[in-house]
Length: 122
Image (cartoon, rainbow, N blue to C red; front, side, top):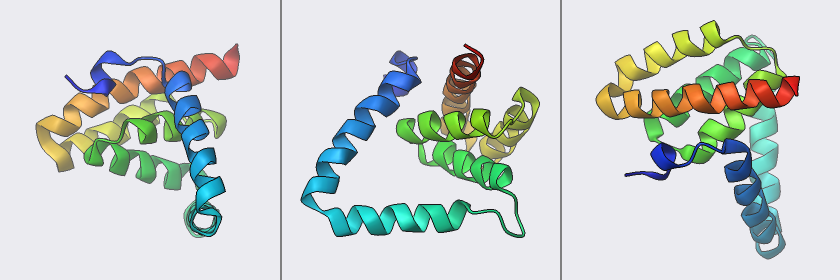
C-alpha cells in the first residue's frame, strides 16, 4: 500500500517535505533557487490563469503518482479559490489519461483538496 492510501494528513506531509527541501536548499542552493524560479515562472498568470495552471500541475501529479504534489497543489488551488467541482472535473481527465493508477491518486486528491479547503476556512 502506498503512502497516499495510508496518509491523509497532507498538511503534515507537505510540512515534512518542506523541511527536507530546506535541508537540500542548504546543500545545493543554486539548484533549489533555479527550481523555485522555474516554478514561479511556469505558474505565473499569462495566457492561462494561475488556477488553471495549478489544475494542470495537479493533474500531472495525479498521473505521476506524486503524494507531495497532491498536498502542495491542492493547497494552492484552495488558496486560488478552486471549487470541488473544478478539481473533480480535472480528476476525471487525469483518470482518463492515466487509467486505474490515476484513479487511486484521484481518490487521494479528493481527500487532500477537502483537507486544504477546511484549513483555509478554519
